Length: 108
Image (cartoon, rainbow, N blue to C red; front, top):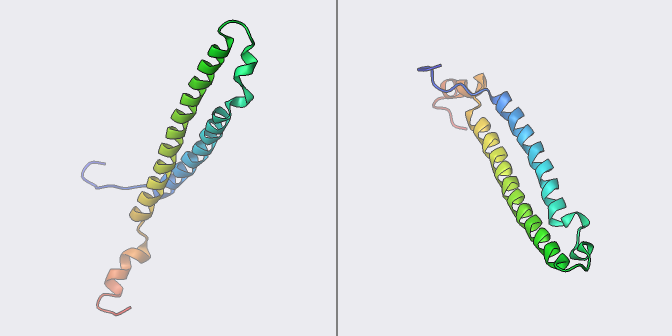
């Protein structure tokens, strides 16, 4: 609501962070599969004219895809970390908020 400041729903942010973490894991599995070429090799493209070159081109494209997916995994992991940090920094409990008043002037 405008004028009322930020009202973060910490539990919802933490739940979203968990979902992003799960998504990062799934996307990481995709990256691993692509990096391994799914068992595909140039030899499987046969000995026809251009077959080896076509195989190399396909594997090159798969390598590029694996790199791109790896970048997405890095982004998702960083987003997860940032959401958790933001939720922790924003969460204020009654006990946390009351500490400054009840313990003002006391030494720890």
